[in-house]
Image: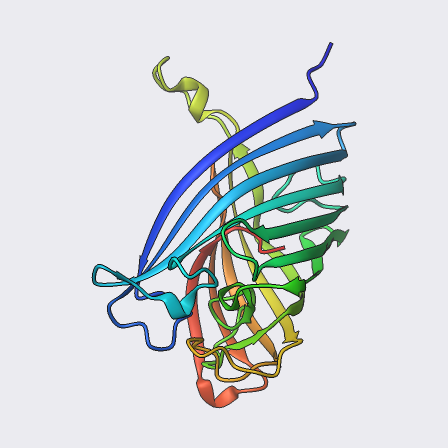
Length: 288
């Protein structure tokens, strides 16, 4: 009998010096602690669901002192309890970039302040992506995702839109909001179609040198993003505005390599803010 249950327990301790989302961030440290447990159940090869519970704390420090004005709790540290339920239908057999497949994922999250009363929210999220290969060496893909907060959230939980936040753009602006919608359309053409190679080596590493993927592709993409739902700028946010949007476009070279799937060398530009110039980056993954 197959075991369709899964359990994933994680803990993390993250200290970020001069966090990018803070406007006056010199000398400030953001400290976040997280403990989570996720219970998953696979109904079939294509259908999966999970329930996740977590406890998360957030504090900001300058030197050895708490910055009380950046948290909801009067102790200088917010402690949040969160629950997340998700279902997904995934027909992708090769997860990174299949020939013809799609993914639909729905997540309903909820959070509450455990040591303060200023946080109580719902967070529904929807993510869809589709992949299509109409001809050999010619691949089309796209995705649409959206999320919103319903209720009371700490200011540091607002959704951001910018070059560091969910959209491939060269724009220097950063927008913030309570809801966010994004979409991506991408065309990939093979220069060297993906091939699998096996190399005979020593017995110790022989299992790792079998069926290794290599190839090369070019990509043309466009990204769109919009955030909204707030009209007051948080006092410490690095955002240039509250609600806002951008459209970006770019080209790239994709190297298909073993174990990491895709290395993407990309050049991108903002269509709304072309004067912000070009942005060049090396990334790993499909971003779809």
